[in-house]
Amino acid sequence: NAGVTQTPKFRVLKTGQSMTLLCAQDMNHEYMYWYRQDPGMGLRLIHYSVGEGTTAKGEVPDGYNVSRLKKQNFLLGLESAAPSQTSVYFCASSYSSASNEQFFGPGTRLTVL
Amino acid sequence: QQQVKQSPQSLIVQKGGISIINCAYENTAFDYFPWYQQFPGKGPALLIAIRPDVSEKKEGRFTISFNKSAKQFSLHIMDSQPGDSATYFCAAKYSGAGSYQLTFGKGTKLSVIP
Image 1 (cartoon, rainbow over the protein chains, first blue to last red):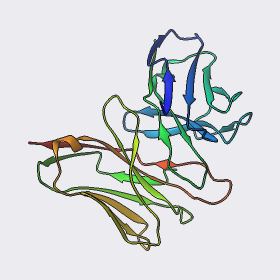
Image 2: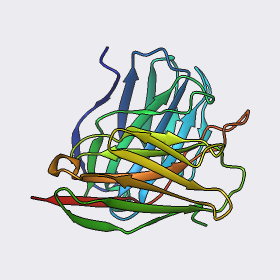
Image 3: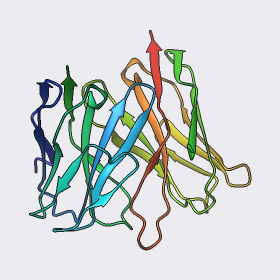
Image 4: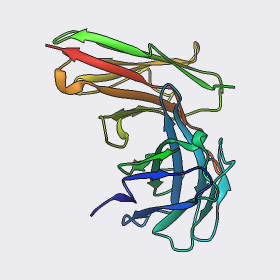
């Protein structure tokens, strides 16, 4: 099993550009999450999904949109990138809320100039 | 409002020493307390976790101590090794129906020097 994979690994954008980050998991997990990690800030939840076709806002959702059209994929979109969105983005998945453990992908480092 | 406070931000320990990282939480509904380990360039990975019905859990050199009345929990790394150098995050979660979010501390960067 590949676990949780993320593409791309690195990306540089100019202010105002858009992009989509792709997360895929092959563990048949119901729940998927997008976090951002900034120095000294820990991991902050952007959006999450409790199943195919559902999404919900996390702690820092502004400027991001998500979609979960297939159970194994969770997409994070930036419609108009801003320098404040420079960060490392992590996707995670878990089997259920009761299982608690979240499995993380390797991350995407995004720089917005 | 930060619900999980972690300290210290960084920690330097000699090889063979004990590393101690502390966390405090505010929400008494939390009932699952994991620690995640993150190496540079990698995603976090679950290291060890505890529920509030026990005061201590040990897995190899890693021990969680839990104080429910003080709303605090800590990670102890015995016989610390250079390979333990990583960033450690504590977290907390309510496991009840409809709750999905892990609340993370801000992380502790541990450096174990030979």
